[in-house]
Image (cartoon, rainbow, N blue to C red; front, side, top):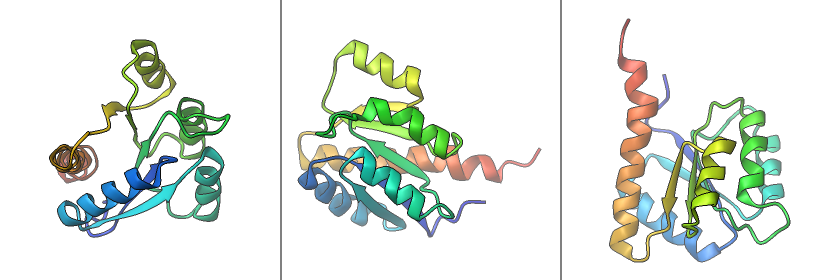
Length: 144
């Protein structure tokens, strides 16, 4: 059973202010979460290699990572390395229908837009916590 007191979220975004804001808001609403930030595809893969024995319970992934490898390219690599055990949620500003479709086809479980104000971030983190609880904790409490 996952430990609700220890929850790691890997945030992959090349914009430090986004990562800092998400962590600040989340630490108030989701205190059991530890946020690990990676700014590129390579940094993400390096982190997973270094922590092979401890996989994150959730990945928040931006599409534009400022490098030749974007978030869409990274999804299959992450699912392959993590054997599909970690849900990948796209957190981006792109609303292009083909991009949204590609994200789901490549293995993302959800696609969300970056909020544009502090209340939006609070709402996002609250929904994220509910999603995590409903998909990770709740299924382990149901007995066959």
